[in-house]
Image (cartoon, rainbow over the protein chains, first blue to last red):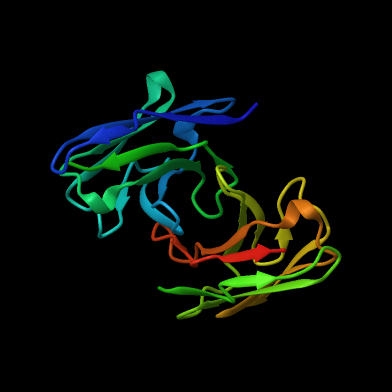
Length: 116
Length: 106
């Protein structure tokens, strides 16, 4: 069964760091473009970052550029998101999602709360 | 690119037909997807390519449009269809953009 499971969320103070993981099963993560999408409480969906399967190029929304880093751990078949310099407005459920156009596979999400 | 959905909330009765709109600030060709999200759940892909149903999606759902104007139609609403619906353009991948959502409520 194709599945994505996120972990690593939690409560962090403004300016702090957190690393999210997304474990893939049922497919090889390195063969697919992968994405992080977030949803602030009661709000809509916002694309955060993507990594290309073919080139390894990484892409970021302006709101997180320079603070977040997306990467893959192919040995663990996992997608990572290193989040530094966290701000209140980064509070959201973070989803990983597979593929590069429409997104047919999503994880269940992990909640990141940035608060002092 | 900005995706605008209307209405923000749609109040309908079971058995009714629901029509949801999505407008792009510039052409996205047919590179548009629709998602359904229920409380506490991840989004679920309904449609891609504007009008192609994803695997396992009921034929009650249909999509249309190209360029800047798109429509998701749900014929004969069932209880499980009450949810929030999002459109998403992927014409400008990796800059994916979602609309603000339409809540379909009873």
